[in-house]
Each structure stands twice: as C-alpha cells, then as structure tokens.
Amino acid sequence: MATVAESRAVRPLPLRWRQSYAGELWAEFFGTFILICFGDGVVAMLWALIGSGRTAGPKTALLGSGDWLLITWGWALAVVFAIYTVGGVTGAHINPAITLSAALRKQVAETERQLKQSQQLLASVSNDLGGVKTDLKGAKGDIEATRGDLEATKKRLETTIGDLGMQSGLIAQTVSLPRTVAPTTSFNTSYMLASPDGQFVYYIDAITKEVFVLDLVQRKFVRQTVLSDSKSRPTYSPLGQLLARLSALFVGSASAKMYAQPGAILSADGKRLYFVDVQDFDRGNGLWAVETATLKMIGHWLTGKDIDGVMLSLDGRELYAASSNDNNVYVLEPLTGETRRALRLDFKPVGLVGAQAY
Image 1 (cartoon, helix red, strand yellow):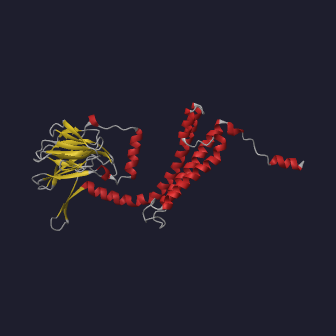
Image 2: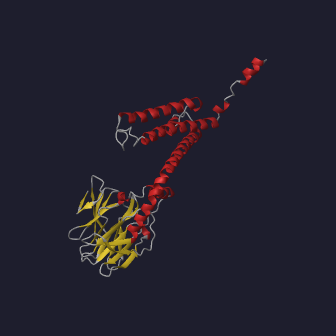
Image 3: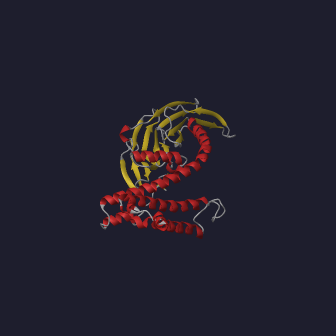
C-alpha cells in the first residue's frame, strides 16, 4: 500500500491545459519572452563591453572577430531555448511572421492567429520595457548631471546677445531678448544676420518663429514679431506627437541634424529676410519671407517640406531652397514665392553653398 501511495504522490499532474487556448497563448508569450530576453540580452552585453578593455578599441564594438560570434551564438541559443521550452505545447512560433505564414497555409484559424500574434507582441513589448527601464535608470544620473549645464547654456544662448570687443574678445555688453513665446523643445535653432549697412542685427528663432531687430547704435531691440500661419500649421498623430516628445527628451542635443546650411539670408538691399522653418529636431515646415522694415510676413512657402538650405541668386531675382524630402532644389520668385521650377538631384541635399547644393 505504501508503494502505491508513494507512486500516486509522484505521479505528474495532467497537462490538459496544453491543448487549451490559454495554454497555447501562455506558451507563445513565454517562448517569445525567452527569445527576446536572451537575444537582446546578448546584444546589450556586447555593448556593455565597450570601455572594458576587451574590445577591438576603447570605444568600439563589432570590430573584433569574437564580437559577431557573441551575437550570432547568443541569438541561436535564444531560439533553441525558446523552442525547447514551449515547442511541445504550441509548436513555438515565437514570431508573428511564422504565425502569419501558418495562417496563410490554413494551418491555424484567423482567431488563433490574432491571439498568438498579440501574445508575441505583448511579450516583446514587456521585455523591451524592462530593458528600457534599466537603461533609463542607468542614464538618469547622467541626464541629471548634465541637465543643469544644458539649461544654463540654453538660457544664455536664448536670452542674451553679447557684444564682443573686436580686439580683446571680451563681452562688453549683453542685451536681453524680450521674448514673448516660451521655447517648446530642449534645443535651440536660431539664426543671426547683420544688415548690409551694419546698423541692425536680426535674431531669428526658427522654433518659436520670433524675429528680433537689434539696433547697434541704440544698443537695444527696436522691433520684434512672432510669425504665424494657421493655414500651414502641421498636424501630427498622437503617436507622432509622442515620438517627437521622446526625441526632444533623449536627443535634444542633436539639433545640428536639422540645422539648415544656410538657414537664413538677407536680400542684397536688406529689405527682405528669408529663413528656414524648424518644427522639431528632425522636421521642418518650409521657409518664411519677412519685410525687415516692418517685420511683416511676406509669405510662408514650401510648407510641409524639410528645407536644408536657402540662398539668393547674385542678381537677387531667384530664391533657391534645397529640400531633403524629395531631393529637389526649388527655384522661387523672391517676392511671391511662386515656384518657377524644381531641379531634381541624384542625392539628398544637406545645404547650399552659393547657388550649389551639397
């Protein structure tokens, strides 16, 4: 009797749950979680080696022969572990593409496909969120350490214009910007131009669309305006807005990616000012034309396009604007903004020099 009781005590429990939807969905979740955990983990381990003295260079990875072996063998073992763990329950799709392929071959029903793919996606997101949380925790100290310096630098850049001594280079005077619009991003994209007669300096904030005129004789700002064009205001989806906020938070220092070359110019007579619009660190919205005497808007042209450089012809009769959206250099009428022609390039322009794109 004791032997029978003991055998009953160690008898494995029935595994009927494996044949249920709940069992298969759990298996897909767990298998995908294992795959991403080991696969992404080995990549993170490789990048953690940077600076440890065990890579090809002090700040490099993927240059040594063993670096690629870590990733390839890591992912291979990740697939093996996932299949060995849940293969007997659900076949271990652990990949939405495999589940879709099975559905196209009529091996799984449409409802089953949707449920399995949702579990795979949920497992991937759950795993990645854990990694992001760890990365954010590790980077929090660096962000906090540099935030004060960045804010101080940003404040100096955005709120003062310094008068440098021509011989000593020392700051002789600062003039505060009479701002009326608070900056909405964590980086600054601004332009400064001097009038042909040397009396005025124009300061343009491409983010807030503020234009200031500094009179060098009176040593004060004499005119300012905030440009607005409701007809061409870009609209973004909730996902686009979220990505823009995350981009501004984590890569706010990368404003050079969208810094047009050149980003602002004056007409030869100094009567018109043209500058490139910047919406975010990697997105623009055409270019603006302004009368310098009144700061009245002449027009907002090429809206919806990222402009990477603006330039006037030598005779001032043509305005050139290089766009990286469609690899074109647009030739505009300087007074009306009418597009005369578009010159197609075989490369993505990053700016203009003279009247040549580069």
